[in-house]
Amino acid sequence: MGNLFCCVQVSQSTVAVKETFGKYNEILEPGCHCVPWFLGKKLAGHVTLRLQQLDVRCETKTKDNVFVNVVASVQYRVLADKAGDAFYKLSNPKTQIQAYVFDVIRASVPKLELDNVFEQKNEIARAVENELEKAMSAYGYEIVQTLIVDIEPDVHVKRSMNEINAAARMRLATNEKAEAEKIIQIKRAEGEAESKYLSGVGIARQRQAIVDGLRDSVLGFSVNVPGTSAKDVLDMVLITQYFDTMKEIGASSKSSAVFIPHGPGTVRDIATQIRDGLLQASSSH
Image (tube, rainbow, N blue to C red; front, side, top):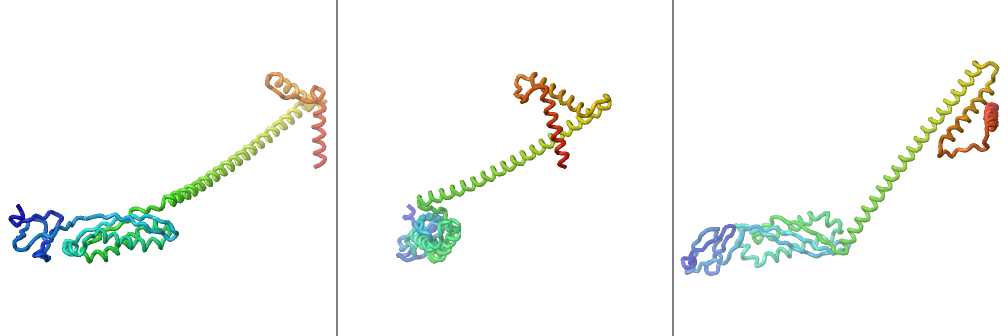
């Protein structure tokens, strides 16, 4: 019915190309237009002004001879004032864009090693965008943005990279664990040394207290009982301690302490040995 009355409708975000007897005439904006077909006028086609996206997968080789698939995403649209160029100059814009993407990627990636390809993907995307902008602007297209959305090495290469990364992390974890064990052993040794030092201080103080107590006992007994010598008092103290010790051994059912040789007369021999040792130490000094 619209063709019968020479009326055509152009949708929003779309322009129509009008021709007169096969020659370009003008661009029709969205809305209703009169196209008298009997005067040789007709619509040659429509051009969308919407933003479009093209994903391009390109296989190439890096500088270290690793094959990778680089996926580039190109966002583009037709310029409204150059819709005629976009309609007439390019029959397949997607193929044209794909060819430029292949050309730039295969010229840039072989100059880089695999690790650098991941690090410099923004530079690669920028190079693709600049090249497309220069080439496609002459055909009425605007390159809005170009992104490198994925870099896929060969499956075996990817597995090797993961194994290298896992080994490096395992080595780091082993070093950290060894360092932690080293610190624990150092702290344990420091604790044992401090414990032994304090134990030695305690034993020294205990022995000093025993010596002070024996001295006071000998002096007090000698004063209170005239005619006794220090030797007699010391022998009596040793005998007393001997019987106290035997009493404690007998009172405990789980005691395993045994005096060899055993007997009350042995205490005198022990006292003689202690006294001789003290005399020899005094003479040596």
